[in-house]
Each structure stands twice: as structure tokens, then as C-alpha cells.
Image 1 (cartoon, rainbow, N blue to C red):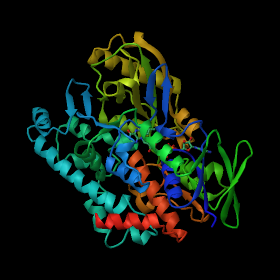
Image 2 (cartoon, rainbow, N blue to C red):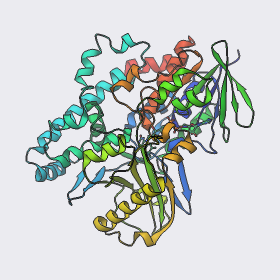
Image 3 (cartoon, helix red, strand yellow):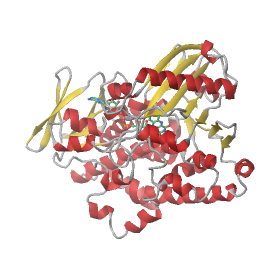
Image 4 (cartoon, rainbow, N blue to C red):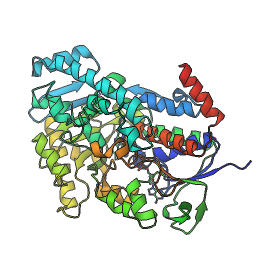
Amino acid sequence: MQKPTAIVIGAGIGGIATAARLAKNGYDVTVLEKESTPGGRANQIVRDGHRFDIGPTLFLMPEIWEETFAALSERMSDHLELTRIDPTYKVHFEDGLRLELTSDIGKMQVQLEKVEKTAFTGFLNYIAEGSKHYKMSVEKFVGRNFHNIFEYFSPGNLPLLFQLKALRKHHANTGRFFKDERLKAAFTFQNMYLGLSPYDAPATYSLLQYTELAEGVWYPMGGVYAGIQALVTIAEKLGVKFIYNAPVKRMKEERRKISSVVTEDGREFTADIFVGNADLPYIYKELLPENKEAKKLENKLYTCSTIMFYWGVDKEYQQIAHHNVFLGGDYKASFDQIFNNHTLPEVPSFYVHAPARTDKAAAPEGQDTLYVLVPVGHLDARSEQDWEALVNHARETVLTRLAKEMGADDLTEHIKFEIVYQPKVWKERFNLEKGAAFGLSHNFWQVGYLRPQNRHKQYKNLYFAGASTHPGTGLPIVLLSARLTTERILEEAGTISVQNMVNALAQARA
Ligand SMILES: Cc1cc2nc3c(=O)[nH]c(=O)nc-3n(C[C@H](O)[C@H](O)[C@H](O)COP(=O)(O)OP(=O)(O)OC[C@H]3O[C@@H](n4cnc5c(N)ncnc54)[C@H](O)[C@@H]3O)c2cc1C
């Protein structure tokens, strides 16, 4: 019997994982990727012996990765060498306070009580709430498909939305546990990984601090990109064909179905089903025949963007830890500037990643590889955005603070090369709508069934997997998206493969 065929548009982590899962379930899969290598936002840059992950540097929720490998009949430990990073971050405040966020409870107690007498009790309660939010979210909302609004707002789910504090703002809720503004900042800035302001994000996202401190922040030797390479190797072993330098230009429709996709160079690919892994709003706007939905999507809320500096440095800076966060200025005002004015805060906060602290191979001997992420507003035609000036201001802030607070006062002289990414690069290189680095936002109105679903309403053979569909952004969450999209495809094709049955039985037994 001939295998059903699938075309996946994009070799981001969502595209690779969906392709592998479909191949495992009997599909003949081809992935069309615009770039010359896989990974999308999780790609890497290698130059003069310096290796940078482009986007993700925090390997979180390893159990979700493990599940992906298991579903493909592989073991993660055969492919990835994971090291736990603890302290997870060193957090630097402008007034000189430093906090090392760590899973070492004793150390947390000493540090927190120095700042605020009751903060340690607050911390334990906060993490306990985060744990509840994490388990409930994954089980009831993030790890499942919703087929209609009634399933989402079902009598069973409604009380859970309240328990998850989905309508309460994260920053305000943190005030129940800590009074000191610096502590509220230390336990909410992680919202920025989802590209969200803690003043808008639901309090549900205390789950992030729980996962980091309880489940751990990990680093795969070779960088996060090692995770992408492992998944591509497995996908290829399962028969997936990757075609690089193949940007899809448009999708053709025929009788309420997608019949084929055409690449920039005029090649046409037909298949039974199509999976869009490129950013969902971009697919609606640029690849599909004209439709009202594209305009609606354009008007939705988007995550922030980032200015990135990738520095190859000919000196080692041991004092810069693996993960470092520098918080600056007026915390609330800085988020207003990013999310309302779509610009760079006057005093920007930033994050520095120095992978060579853990993985010597990330830089030549005696040298360093530094990645700097500065959150900034996304592209907005109505705002004044002088990117050159904003990039210069970001660079100056970072170098000044690293000199003053880390003793890296000769860093400028030791930067051998600099690669800069800013919102226009995110948009042009990866086709991210508005250059929003993390895709569509995750406020209450854009999660669960309210987020664009993973099957097109009109074209029944067009599916989506990736950060801007359900459940959302972040590598493990996109891995869940790949699982959910595959499940929907198999369910709708009426295909329950032997492998699926075996997996379901194994899960039931466990
Ligand atoms: C700066 C930054 C830091 C981050 N940090 C973390 C972190 O520490 N931990 C974490 O878990 N997550 C992090 N994330 C989020 C994570 O990177 C994303 O959620 C995830 O990589 C998104 O994967 P995806 O498959 O949805 O999309 P993408 O990675 O965007 O993949 C989509 C693919 O589609 C391709 N494509 C686009 N248009 C076309 C076309 N027309 N034809 C063919 N191909 C096309 C693109 O080239 C790309 O390869 C970070 C993201 C950024 C930007």
C-alpha cells in the first residue's frame, strides 16, 4: 500500500519533531526549509572556533524532550549529554544586590533573608504554587488538543482556570509572596522568555520558576543546537527527506484543500497533508490565498523582540557565569517601553550567556564566546524606531555594566568580531511577523482554544506546528505542539498506528 504523503514547511524544532513523528507513523515526509541548515530560531552560528546558539540557551523541562525521543523509539541519553547548570542564574541589580538563583535551598534561604525577613517562606510558597500551576497546565491545558470552545470552557475546566490564576497578573500575584521590589523582579523576569511583560502575563507563569529551580536548567554539551541535530538525525533515520534552501513562496488550493506548495525557484510539491512550521501569522499573510483571517492575526498581540550581540572574544572572562541577568532601571517603566512604546527602555535589562564556562569547545582555548540578549519592542510602523541608535545604546549599556560590575573593563578591546541581530533580522531571516522573536503573545485571550489552532478551519489538510499555534513558544512547548499536531493528523486520518497503540499501552501501564 502506498504511504500517505506530508510536506512540512520549515525545519524549526516544531517542523523537525512533527516530521519525525509522522514518519514514525507511516507517512512519507518531505521538509522544505528556506535556510541552508535546520533549527530556525534554535540554529547556531560557528565562526573562528566560537560557537553560539542563536536563540534558545536554556534547556528546560527535560521530561518533555525525553517523551519526544521515546515516541520515536530512541533514548535521549544516547543522543544528548546534559549538564545541570546550578546556580541557574546570577541576577545583578543596579544597586549592587546580587542573587544566585539555585536549587540549593540553604543558600536560597541565606540570600533571601538578607533582603527581606519573610522572603524565604514567601519563596517556598511561591515555588509550591508554581509546581501546582505547572502540573495542572501540562495535564489539563498545554498537553492536549481542544476541538471546540465548549471543551476549553467546560464545567470541568472553568474552576481550573481560576486555580491557575489565569486572569490574575503575574507581577501583582508575586506581591503576595514578596514585598521587596527586587525580589518581585527576580521571580518574574523569566516571563521575558515567553516574550511577555510580567504586568500582562497571567500569574500561571510562576510555573517557569518552579521548572527552573525544581526540574532544573540544563545544558546539552555542544549547545542547544545539539538537540536539533539529534532530532534531525532521528528524523532522517525514519526516512524524512530535508530539502534546504527551498523557501516556499505560496500554497495552492483546490476544492477547500491545499493541493501543493510552490518554492521560490518554481518547484511544485504535492502531498496529502501539509504542516506549516514557519510562523503561523506569516503563513496566513504570505503563503495562503488572500483571506480575512490574516488581517485578524496581524491585529493580535505579539511578543517582544530582541537585540542580540554575538561576540567572539580573544580573552577568557571567568567572572562571567554561564547564565547572567542584569536588571536595570524602573522595572515597570522598562516593560511599558518595550510593550507599549515598542522601543528599548532607557535603562535596558539584559542577559549574558557564556557557554564556555560549561563547554570548553564553545570557544578556542583561552578565549570566550559571549551571547547577549537585550529585550526590545517588536517592529511597529506607528512607533519611531531608529534601529541603529537603539543597537548602539544597547551595546553601550551592556559594555558599561560588564565593566563596572564584572571587572570586564577591557572587553571592548578583546572583541574580535560582533554579529548583531535585531527585529528586522528576525523578520527577514525567519519570517517572524513583526520580528516578534517569540511569536504570538500568550495572554489569556491568546492561549488554549483561544490561540490559533493547529488545523486550518477551512483547509482541512493544512496543519500547523510551532510557537504561534497551540500550546505556544519555548522549545519543550513546541515539542508538545509537534505531538499534539501529529495526534490531530492521525485522529483525523483515522490512523491509529500500531506504534501509537503500543505507546498508549506503555503510558497506561506506567
Ligand atoms: C532570542 C531567543 C531566545 C530564546 N530562548 C529560549 C530558551 O532559552 N529556551 C527555550 O526553550 N526557548 C527559547 N526561545 C524560544 C524558542 O527558540 C522557540 O519557541 C522555538 O525555537 C520555535 O520553534 P518553531 O519550530 O516554532 O519555529 P522556528 O524556529 O522559527 O522555525 C520555523 C522554520 O521555518 C522556516 N521558514 C520560514 N519561512 C519559510 C518558508 N517560506 N519556506 C520554508 N521555510 C520557512 C524558518 O527558516 C525556520 O527554520 C528563544 C527564542 C529566541 C528568539
